[in-house]
Length: 150
Image (tube, rainbow, N blue to C red; front, side, top):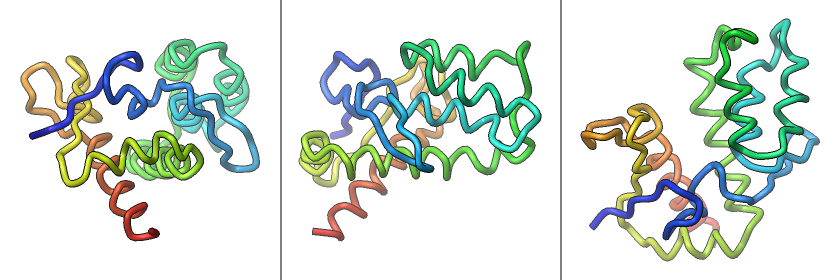
């Protein structure tokens, strides 16, 4: 049986990048994984000032909107390669930092974890459930790393 998640208020909503679980990475505090991820699209670019704006966005939705707005700026040139590692580092830090949700992740045992996004075929499964589910894959790899640490 697979575990599907998407919205923060739903079961397993703590797996969402929008969940209110802050992280500390790169010597800075980030309100959510989404803030960190969206800001790092502009790391090392001429638009690096956007990182601060995204970091201080009032909500993860606002951070996502800023990070996705191509009218403002373009992503760093290596983003298509770097984005998975940026996400992995942030998700790992989130579950290492917050023991309550770490327990939720570990309690999923060996179940497949799927981001049930109806629109995202890269990070989630998409409407037709044919997406790549990279976020689910990262969560399952983090789960294994945490298991191995115990």
